[in-house]
Image (tube, helix red, strand yellow):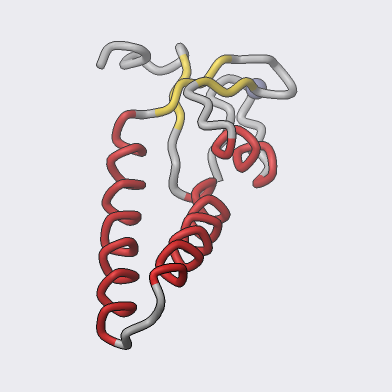
Length: 103
Ligand SMILES: [Zn+2]
């Protein structure tokens, strides 16, 4: 799990989950209030995971001739799972790192 780059306190799963659900680009440490910015590469990682899941959902539904509503439910469910595990691989950086807000 991501740690605060200033005070080294680990962010809690629910803290990061809350920020991810809100689609926040900036998060703040609860202890020292240090601002952490979402790393661009994390967005890419999310897309690389979400895309195959979405394609697979459509493929499975087509293969088994399931109703279109099932695609919708299945994608919502996949997104829900993805958002649940996202705190484990989404990375943030703070001004205590040299490349903060440079790309
Ligand atoms: Zn902190």
